[in-house]
Amino acid sequence: MTTEPAAEISLTDEEWRRRLTPEQYAILRKHKTERAGTSPLNAEKRRGRFRCAGCDQPLFESATKYESGSGWPSFWAPLDNAVATQVDRTLWMVRTEVHCRRCGGHLGHVFEDGPPPTGQRYCMNGLALKFEPDAG
Image (cartoon, rainbow, N blue to C red; front, top):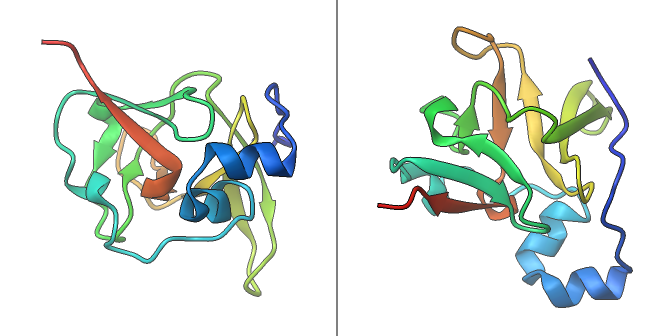
């Protein structure tokens, strides 16, 4: 199902620039992509939650993270009501772009080549995420 992202948090461009690093701003607000294999979150194996780097919205549980071989942190399912999607027709192809439901920040794309139980691969930019380990 594809839905337009509905931003609950609406900041000006200047406010986003102050809140985010230049790299995060480029990804979350300008739909850029980090280089494959560069995110420290690729190696993150602890239990916890991955949150939006723009607004702190919980997005993915660590139990849904898996090694896709793509070079980006990948998950087989987001948390309920965490993300929104829309059609992306850039780069001469049609893909499904994933956004944070709360702030509308660009996170990455979802593909239909993931593992069971969903068959989906949420391929996320590590700079669009932050990790919060479980307490203890």
